[in-house]
Length: 519
Image 1 (tube, rainbow, N blue to C red):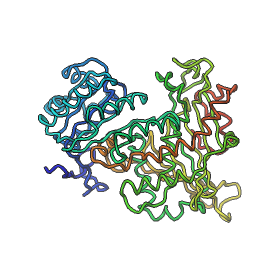
Image 2: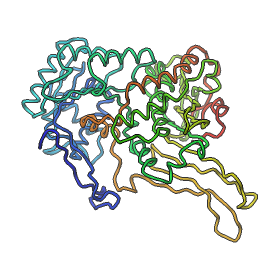
Image 3: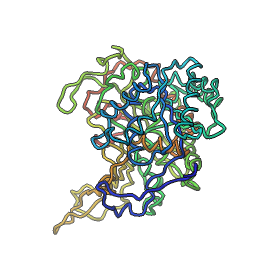
Image 4: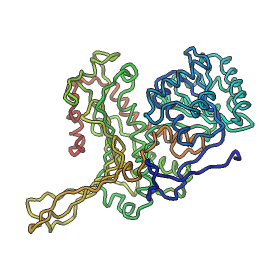
């Protein structure tokens, strides 16, 4: 197959039967040959998410046949030790029908290599260069290199510097790309510092800032929902929309991440990246094409139309909280300040809510409410578009409550779209009640949505930046949240903890907006 060729496969339902909703679709694409290097390959993200994603691509036939994987981390492994480590992790984190076995695993395993490395030592990056050259000879990887930074962010600049020192920033025979995990900086200043370090070595078209939310099927479907359906786009504006709520809630606490989380908090960890990116997709104008930069340009325009709150206005446009002891699913759980590696007087928020306005023609006056929190009643990520109420009521019994129409894009745990509308109750009376239409991706298309990382790693191999965040959008997102972050950091909240685990969140969120969707 030529290096730039793309292979396609006929899509089928999960049971092998042809699915009419997927009939005739070119389901998958195979990228050109390449080596992918995972920096931090002995870490949690690699074993739980990244390695299973790559192996799943092999199972699904979307990984190039001429492929190699290199782990690069401080843990001491030989190539054979690391292959066995990978096999054990796949046994743990792959579903039953994806366990490593047989000829397919044997071929995958022989393509795995490892370098025990100090990220501050250029010699180990020279070893990496030699390993990649060997992969080109042994596995036909054609000088194409994908570097994936799955290390703690403070290490990013060192890795980038040493890639250049070892001459790995480009290969005349093929392409070079770098995937950068979130968080991209811990504040505006650190994000700009990191950007300067990266752009000194890699041009923007080789930088893939990954946000795994973008790889989730319902998030990708926002564009299709809006721009492939004439019933939605004409009413997707200030004339018909009353408000937009974007929620990312978890029932879990900080688990084993207390040390990290106590220096991050909900605003940094979720609002600045995941949730604001969802807002940009919901509010963007129609791009002139499906080209990655045309789409990313429209997303940036949305963020540039959001005025960051003045410091004096932070408390009227935001709310924060910290969970205390409570009950989740009938079990008692401890409060945030009792979690491992959390300061006993911590001022870190585990709940954040923000009200923003997109100051352009389409959205003038429409509030966008964003919230994210831990130890809430259930895990749910969704976008709810609430439409304006009817202008004049003449139907229904006087005791009936006529609700506003709501369109809900369900991201997790359910993946689908729900629409609330009003309908007459059968019978002689003119009673009106809310009813729902639901679409579910799994049952609708007969297949399970691929894990987000599988889609994103595949796109990076293909050179498709559509689902990756451009620097100007990252910078603007930091500019939007920075006044809130500064005020919160410099104000001790003596009410913490101010919501019980398992509750709907702090009272300050209800004061910000009284009609949050019930979790």
